Length: 482
Ligand code: NAD
Image (cartoon, rainbow, N blue to C red; front, side):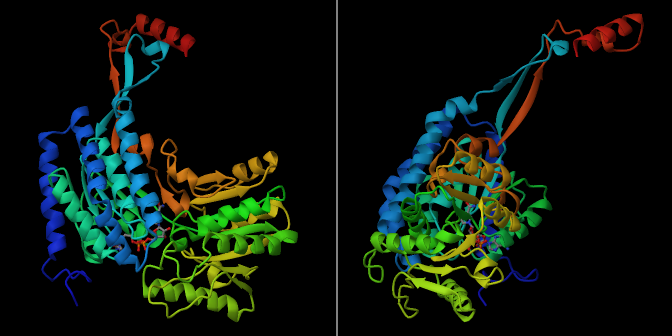
């Protein structure tokens, strides 16, 4: 067994584990020497990220393609290059304001003091990233951490080895490792990484591994942001335009072949319309990918194991007699693991497909009796990462928004709330802890330090002993003010 694949306390640490320890020590030292990088230094780091993306986009796209078998070039440009570049540019544009102390009101009885919340770099930030968007989900948190003035280490996924290696090389060519470095490796590297006493650790991945990461980080009281997954519903209200909703859902479910944390996991549709919705989604899918079995616009499933898992979900539904609509001709022997969209009409709630996050192009449609039934169905499961609502009835929309708790929401479309840097992005409950993107990301990687600036005219001395009648007078005055 390679040293990288299993952790054995008696074994010599692997190269990855040694690299984690070495670079962490270097970054910690560098942080000590410059604990508050200037605005110019941070802008320089963000500029370097943009330059890294621009100089390496072809190399990274080729690596992603090799890792997936086939990844749509357009999806790579949209989801890995443009979004990540935009996030760095957004941070640069707003950095001066984000770095400003936030003035807060000082109550009358503490006047004339002043109070501010002053953002401060935390130190060394760790990032563990998944395989599904291997550039965006590694670099976007790094952008937030660098903007906040931290040193950064990334441990990318072992399931995208080409991308992880190219990313590590590109970062090493662009940054000094005391500022920003990528350490590759398997699960043992991930475990060692999670046990490293970072000043903040952001993990993106599954809820199961995220739980283990949180437990490892807790040993050091390392604060964590957990960007996890879950079953994100798409609710079609009675007032929805079915064709428009179907086009949006088909797009959101088939982008990256459904291997998107915020992809619609399942659809809730009014009972009388479920068949029509399914047909409209199938039609939309065929329009989006007319040659779904052969087109390079449609992305492969990442590995044989994931492909087999998705086929097993479909087989379980078929064995239960569930009505299935195939959008393409699914071919398990396809060398590039292409799996066209498969729609499952009203699978029973105990079908495998309803028990786990699907994370692929399999879409169950569940009939609901009413808008309240849809809310009850969502609330019967764990709190999802995303929720999509389609319709024009604003009261129905607000009822769903108020009575369900999800990480984020897009109304009348899919995915787009993720691309809006001014909105915090994160989960809730089992779909995550904390948030990043834009200013929320800057604050996640900062210590938002409260500072109270006392005035030389402060009256606080009146409350010090030895207590006297004057103390009583001062207290009764304060009581009147408060
Ligand atoms: P995963 O949890 O299997 O792996 C994520 C990362 O954790 C990888 O780098 C892996 O090497 C590392 N890892 C594995 N075991 C570890 C351990 N014991 N200690 C520390 N690190 C360990 O997830 P995945 O399969 O790469 O990604 C798919 C999951 O990620 C889905 O559940 C999806 O919803 C979720 N996801 C969430 C978001 C989000 O932003 N919320 C984005 C993308 C994916």
